[in-house]
Image (cartoon, rainbow, N blue to C red; front, side, top):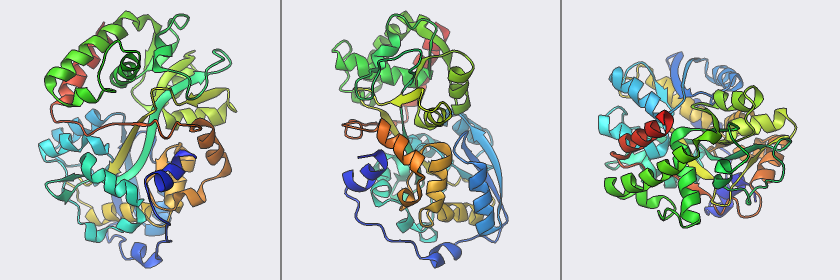
Length: 374
């Protein structure tokens, strides 16, 4: 089973009906401009061209590399400057805390164009607050292990571990993102019984538990920091680490890893570790200061418009679409790569990010900075 079929089969989604064209065409905007703020590698030129061809709307794209970067930019502008953003669904609480997102008018959205399981699961993971919908699903993906198998052979999906990054023989050869490296190392240390954390879920229960567990994990990472050659904060930095900066192993997103797999014809491989690939869902939301509301809803409905736009996103970026029927339009190479990575129990073992408590970001950043500065 590949991870796209998992959405349908593993989460109980029934058969998908094709979207009636009228649902899409009626939603298109009177405005002809969309100021879109997206993760750095989510929106391809092909997507922008297709959206404009379908709607006549010009996209002005700006990008970010982290949830905090996007949140801080919108906080500084009091929610103004963009018509549509793509926050992680589990980060919804942080946005709601500052009142930066407007409640969505779901009557203007073709909700049937989203995978039903993703629509439902996003309700309780940050997409809905105070019985109002603020974030709708866009895509989902994972963070796991990427290896240059020519330089480090022998690692296999479902057998590799986050702990392998911190072993001997990898001095100055790995690349990680500081805050998610804490999660990966925590899952490893919990599995071997060194830092019990209920698979890191205890860190979401209270400030005290998060500080206690993060402190032990960060001490472990600092002790093994000699293995780190580079830290990454966006997809392009990940690619540069392997293709230009001699990194041979790392904890990375699946999107850039899949693009490197294609470019190197499989010499660089992305692998799900035995502790489980770290899974997330990102969404689409409208800031409080958005000017082109119709254009924002037009983008959402274009993406939910029958599967082709979702597949275009997946084929060009390597991430999974939450649009219904996207799997019907995946190219063969993309399907093959997904099946090679997510074999065996990889889908069953996914570790999904819980919704972030409003106090967690500050603590996470505190220990991230301690790791970076050590």
